[in-house]
Length: 246
Image (cartoon, rainbow, N blue to C red; front, side, top):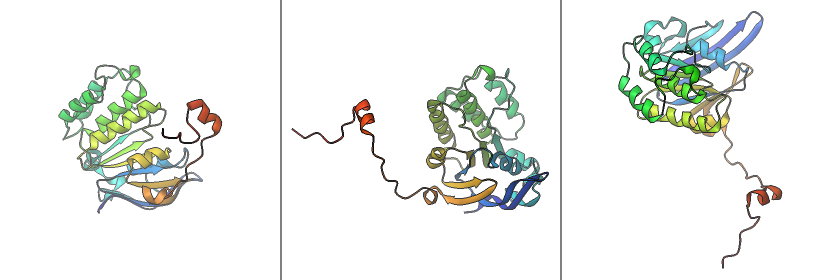
């Protein structure tokens, strides 16, 4: 499978501080990959390098077959990004944001925005400052997918969401990309998100890639069940042994 993104021997420093060291991995075309790492591991910096906003000190970042920092208009149209905090004016509504974005792209799927805004219950005429974080992130994901990009980058999209909002956003993402050919890279520190959404995982620790492969390769084959404490069993009404069948 042809990679849509290739990172080779990437080093990035700010002054004397090394942020990324010898980072190498591929992102296969048409798959969802997770960039997994704790806060401060270098995930956001790597995202900026993939977008061409930063230039590596050493190594290379190839996106759609070209250096990321030389991608030009083609790359700007075919690579979209959702930051961890919506970078939109608070007074703007999702409808206004979509209209602004549509003018920036030669291709914009307005029908998809209309359909999924309704299905995902995105309030089109409510300002972003009045939306919940989950509603705002769903609007941002829709705005990033409407140009039908070849590559979608998401930086900690599930951070700070309550469990219900996180479930809705994960379902929204999968619904939006169903039967589409987008490649997606999700930066997250949540292992369960990676396990549920991703085909592949790249693990970043202290600026270095420690693992790159399938989710099955990363997770242990067998995780022994943990016993439930008797006090908790009593609290939730779980029997300690099966009742006899009468």
